[in-house]
Image (cartoon, rainbow, N blue to C red; front, side, top):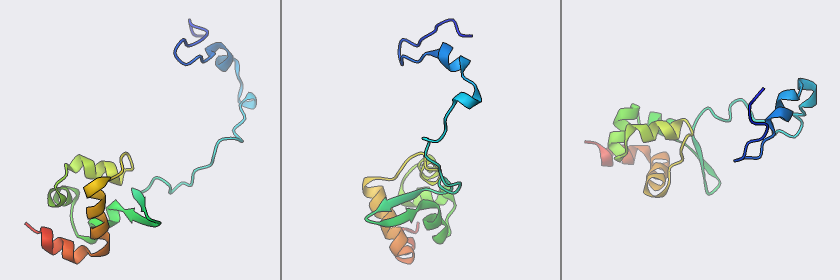
Length: 111
């Protein structure tokens, strides 16, 4: 049992929660998530889906090389691919170009 029966910050009644059994918990109102929903970073752009990992692989680039090629930290690429963050602004525009014309982007941004 917890010392504080209620959280001052959230108003959560911990005593009531601790007393609940599995039968008391109703999961029917929790939306179901498809198992593949979090596999890859998919960014909706005007009805089209951009998959960052697929775009990078289509360019035959490692995460490090792709990050260097488009000028972002490798951690940013990882965050996009793992859906922790979404690309925005110029990065999103560049990814759209990468998706539509990978050969042109590869030639234009080759070091």
